[in-house]
Amino acid sequence: MSIANNIKSTIPQTESAREYLKFVEERFCSANKSLAGTLMAELTTMKFDGSCSMQNHIIEMTNIAARLQTLGMKVDDSVLVQFILNSLPPEYGPFQVNYNTIKDKWNVSELSSMLTQEESRHLNML
Image 1 (tube, one colour):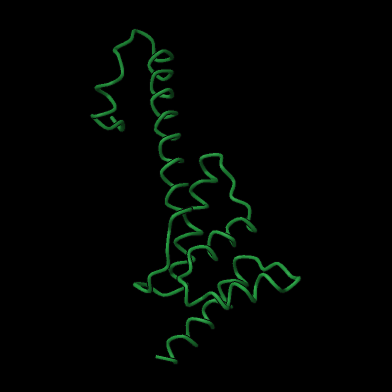
Image 2 (tube, helix red, strand yellow):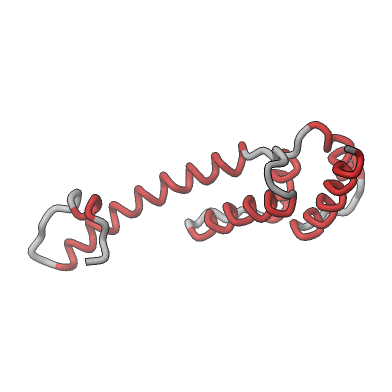
């Protein structure tokens, strides 16, 4: 009763619950692969366009990474930091250069804090 009708129609009728559940598992496995590919594409092509705050942008990217982890694809914190930096528009170029020249690596929380400050600086310049 809790399986969507579009999925129910693709699963053959069986005599055994075990067989039925096997077919259900196979359907969800392919759906998970597809979802993982979609989420990965979204994470790698996402761009900050100013339509939301920098903090919301970073939260959205972090949520995508968390969803990928539930599908068995762990996105390392340092990789997520790079994805976030790559999502920034050209006016954040000096910020990116500065990050690349320092010895320390920031985690997502530290990057979020720094980018929120940088966003405020950009807004004050307007």
